[in-house]
Image (spheres, rainbow, N blue to C red):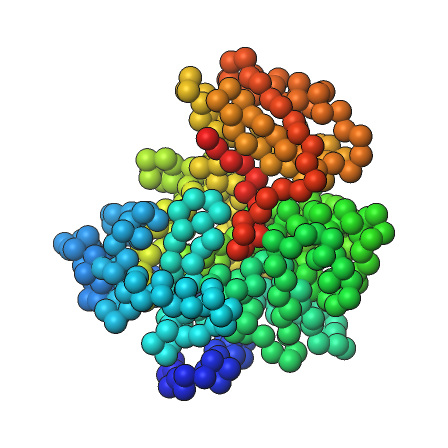
Length: 458
């Protein structure tokens, strides 16, 4: 695709992306139902081109991949630490350095205004809410594909339903500064027919509810933890919305949150899985439980802690992701600590990508104790998720158990709940566990993204 030259005016330049989206969308929607073998042919062609480009333009990859072919499983893996420690050697345009990227991000954080770097590139940062902050650079195609992977799912659904008379009004409750990819995408691809209204997820939920009540959006996009709080307000009669679509990203969408939102708003929440670095990895199709992989844009390898392949039906400790549509900062077998289970049955359709179970959080959210006991977050979720009077919670590890901070909707038996959690921890292998529960008015969210870190290890 030929990219129109940049003018330096962001509002003019972003229209290049908007026009490219319009030109590509029909083909992107078709890819959702294209036979998987054909999709893999496209993906593998992109993979070979990525590897060639990385060897030619990236000093770091050139050295690591020397003497190796294109068999992905034979190539070395890379981590977030590798990315940030070797950024200048990984990027394929030597004009762009990590120092320059960070200066751009500092200006963006100060002004709140998006802009392209070197005419065509988008630079964003992860919030660091789950650990190491990362800086990601995407070329024109990479940023476009990041948007298309999610947007095509919505367009596909629209084609299955009667056309809406009114334009979509989208309330996106994530970050509002385009330092973060959610805000950068929303600002870039907003149109008169699909206008994005950004709200900070770090705002008090009462303020958010009032803003939504005034806006009356048709589409709501937010974190599952915030959807849960908004649904509770709607159930209490403090929020009335007529939504056509709900999408969630960035956190685990539990069965409890999905069911409550569906009951209150009359809409089944859709869920996406991805990271700032890797772009979208999977999305719900509205038919099958679980998510469908974006097979044309990434290669996703489920592996155990030692990077050995994990078969379908078995939960992987992490995944290795190769993004085949962004050549500016090549991620080749990049470690993502999300725990994923590939389903061991063929996808019955309508989409053709392989199915995975709902993503069950991150391996690095688990609590490791001094005696060798390892407690997975589900040990807490299994108990806390059953409490109808529990609006929100955060679990902070202590040397011999956990300190659980809770927001309640009524008179919750904290002592009894603490004893249940202690029993669950004992069954998980932690000797003589101690759990305290504290009622709080609100939980601290990440200052920039508004994301809630549900489990905080020592």
